[in-house]
Image (cartoon, one colour):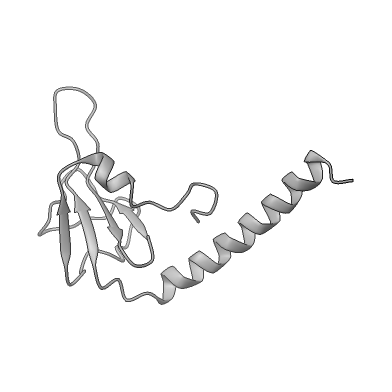
Length: 106
């Protein structure tokens, strides 16, 4: 009889394997099409701009000083900064809908 604990262990093992496969795909991807969300600017808490590759779902968070033209990645070296095609997004929900499920996001 399968227990919940056995199912949880199996799920964690499968999720770990999926993360490794996604990571390998992201490293090999040329990032041909990237969506750009400019972030949220108001008197409240700002949200930095973000980019995501529409093919492999690699995501980067830009610095507060980034924009569509001059991209600065907050995590260091950019992989999506020189993307050949940017699809601008006006809404955060549109951007977040493009993300990988949290269980397999490397």
